[in-house]
Length: 64
Image (cartoon, rainbow, N blue to C red):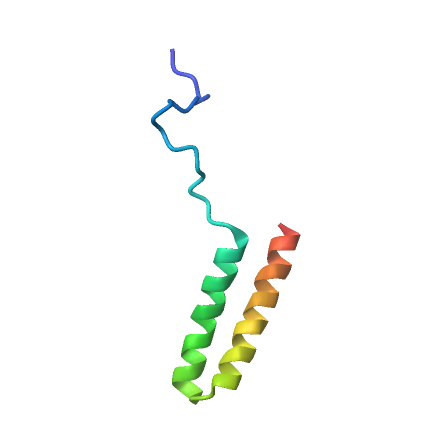
């Protein structure tokens, strides 16, 4: 008989493969800032894009 419940064995890792919201937000901010620097050459604009992305990801994570 097969059950869906899984108890980790002692040698199995118990850490979750799901990334934290902070690491997802930082990755998204970096991904938004890089093209802004390349296209415009402005670090200030890249910072604005990164902050806007961080705000949007933070708002989305609060809604979830």
